Image 1 (tube, rainbow, N blue to C red):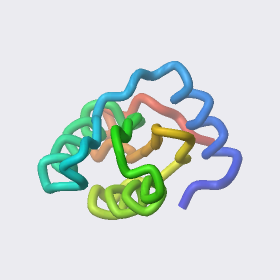
Image 2: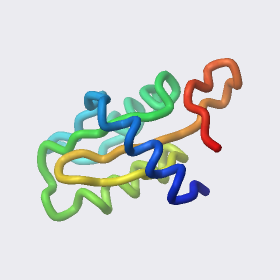
Image 3: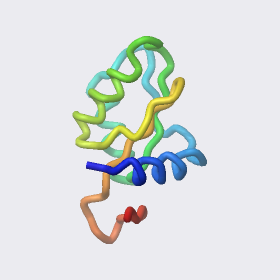
Image 4: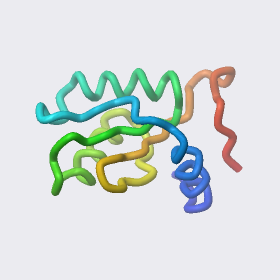
Length: 97
């Protein structure tokens, strides 16, 4: 569980990132969850851009975070930010207090 201070730090770090995973009109299919898992393994902190689903973005982001065992940092507009610490200590790039 992340504290609000840690979430704020991660949100600030994510502000310079470009979206890596895109959720299109096909919905949150297993392919999106697999791509998100791969991106989280590679980067720890990932932006997800929604192409559609105006009223359901928060819910879809929470479902994807749960599937990927990640923390949902924030959802603003068309973008969700997710974080999952790397399982390999050598690949951990983000230091949280």
